[in-house]
Length: 401
Image (cartoon, rainbow, N blue to C red; front, side):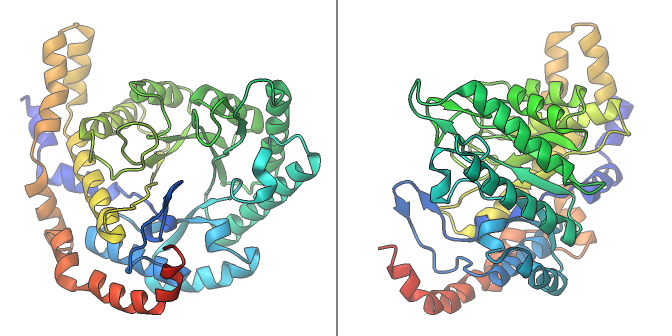
């Protein structure tokens, strides 16, 4: 490796990069979740907002990388704005910031035929009212991001006017944008299918990009790594969005088939590495560009929820650290000269570098456990929560049987 690469491998370089890296955990990742076919209840799962904050605090205390928690309005703010004071108190008590605010536009029976895309103007207004309250909640908490995922679409040809729904969506998103405070952002997510299987109103990054641009300058695109067709080149999508200054953030997970919501890196760690590399490569060329928001979005149905969340955060740290080792100057030169094998090996050598010793050193120097997963097990926290919560919510668990 060149002298430049030697500097990249230095502990000081990696430490500075890891100090900057933060990935937000989702409140719903600590609660009981399931599939269309049912739920497998975990006795240690969080049931209350305070329990979610407590679990998120455990992840951050062990990893040093997750100082905030994304929140879902319907699940975490059942009383809307009236719950803001409680969230502020819990945030102060547990040392975890309330992160991105996510409206819920898919669970209500009113949204059977859509929310912003519903043919009924009354239901579209109901959806907008909920979204505007979500923006207000975020503003009260001092949050930057409000994230939007829409389940809207149709299952059968001819059952909906797709063009009309585009217009309705554009109207709803524009009115939402007008309610944003200075500095707030709205992140528009996309998904090719599920629960809609004929057409989804925001099915890919191009549709999300057009909607965001039409809404206004504080709207950006949110990329969920599971929301793509098989074999789609997500790095190319990132390259386009970054070039257009429209990449707002990520929802990280892994998948084998579709939107599987598996722990990050469990199926294809090289994919996540390539995504981090694409972002870091862009910021090497454009150091003043704003960094995207990194957020975990996973559903741990079989793995213990807290262990799985911590495992994902640690994997994200490791893959991000590997991406920090890519010698961008050397790679750019090799690309210009079309030295294909050497260019690929420049990338691959960073991926194959064992960064775990450097991570252990970084953790030790910051008073963190060198092996956070083992520290979680040694603490007995999961077992204690299983006893306390399992006993407390036994009757609720039986309802899932």
